[in-house]
Image (tube, rainbow, N blue to C red; front, top):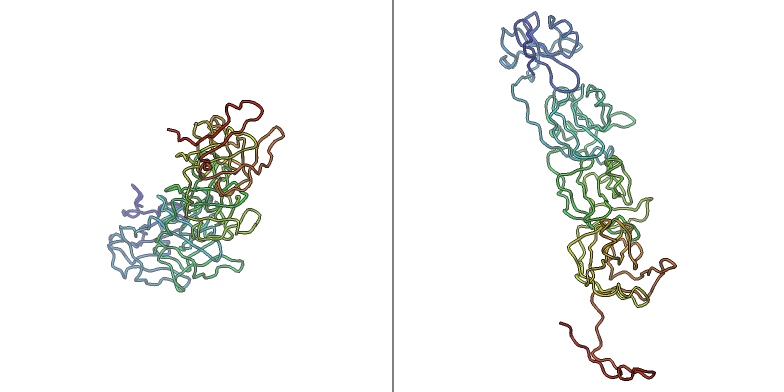
Length: 449
């Protein structure tokens, strides 16, 4: 960028923009243009002829006006003419978004990167999208592209050559997505130094579009239910889902080690998604595969067969009917589906509007009073009839229910949930032998209006 009001031998001076190592284009006392990153040049007020690139005598012509054979570079043997050196007033186009996958190592650097308004060492700078651990794709001092998540590069103002991934050669102005193949690809840092890795992909083609909703089930865990995509929001460069509806928050996100994770509010509020833990995790780094495309396991490495993540949402019954013959009979009856979700699951309301069938914050189905539940915005575990943690099993498929009593929760095999009210007998005959005989007789079922 032009240094306003600054001249050298009556000609303008340009300084490389952005973070990183400083460099200048200036006219030396011998009438040649120089490109230098030596701070001595600035200290001498550009009254010298130092640089790694220079022109022949410029005759007061600006760098962009010189012939293509006017430029040379300096190495240990001296000056060498280079017809590929060129100057332009138009910067090369930089992709707005880049998508990175690295399956063989440094998987945590994968994700979507978005073009920054800043520059590093005179070249475009990309930052990984969204919340989580910050990562950058930048041009280092060596002229190579680097991908890194260390804050050390920011502390060093990008004046370094640090990264987990690196372009195999200096890029000479080519964008990162132009590097592919064995002759111009990417390397990965290892204990032995840099190793070529032809499986690294950095391109402009987006990852597969994420699903709008995911259905997560795992028997015995509370971190299940329907998760909805948060449009335009990311964690560590990948899409972010939040559990649908009211109640305690749960998140499905890509952790800072490249695994899919399902975790509670601490992931967002405490760690800002700079973590790789949760109730459930993908078994390996996903390298761009969607949550429903990878195997999962429970925290602690439990069998992956217990965890299911799918895009197919279950059919939700319109009506549930509670039968409770041994207690809390007033809670029995018909419950109608309502347009509300709680902890990722549907909610049903009793016919009289006083009770709800919902999932509590401990992952159990509850039949509870509407006032007690709504006063806490459904973030509770309140009720008089409940199941074990259901992990995604709907109420009518639950085999065992518990009833609240003065002794606490007691297993009640008489409780069941049906998809409709029990079919009424068309006729009943009442026999009274010890009084009220006048009420005895045949009774017929009558429809109610």
